[in-house]
Image (tube, rainbow, N blue to C red; front, side):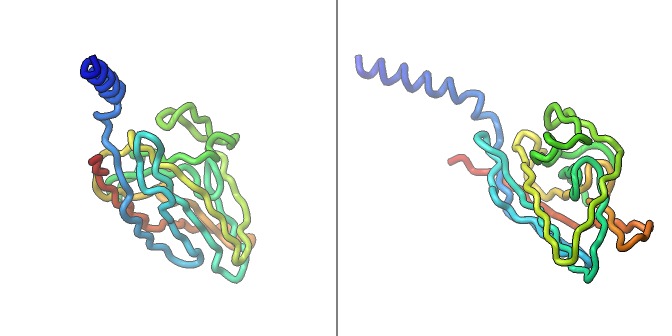
Length: 190
C-alpha cells in the first residue's frame, strides 16, 4: 500500500512539473559596457538568472561627468527609454526582446498590455541631469523572451541611441550610443 501511495504522489508531482520542464532557463554571465564622455555609464547584473520563478535583472546607471548640466532626451520613460536586446550590434528597427521596467506601467507615454504588446508616444521627454548627478533604473529580462544562448546587445526600442543629450540652450542634440554586450548562457538544471 505504501508503494502505491508513493508512486501516486511521485506521478502527481511529475505531472505538475510537466509544463515547467520544457522551458529553458538562462543565466547572464557577463555584461560589457563601452561608453564615452560626458557620461559615466554602467550596467550591473543584480539577478543573473532568468528562470521560471523570476526574471534576470540589470541595473542601468548614468552619471553626468561634465562640469555643467546636460539635458537628456528620450521617449517613453526618462532617461533610458524602452530598451531591447538584439542579436547583432548593428540591428535597427523592430524585433528583439523588450527589457521591462516598472516605469512602463506608470508612464503616461507608454501603453503596455504585456511585454509583447506595447506602444509609445513620440513625445520627447527632456530633463536636466546636473553635473555629478546619478540616475539608475532596473530592467528585467524574462526567460521566455530570450532567443537562445549567446551574446546580445542593448539598443533603444525605436532608435539606435539609448538617448540624446545637449548642453545649455543648444538645440544640437548628440546621440549617446554605448556598446552594451550581454552574454547569456543556458542554465544547467541539474
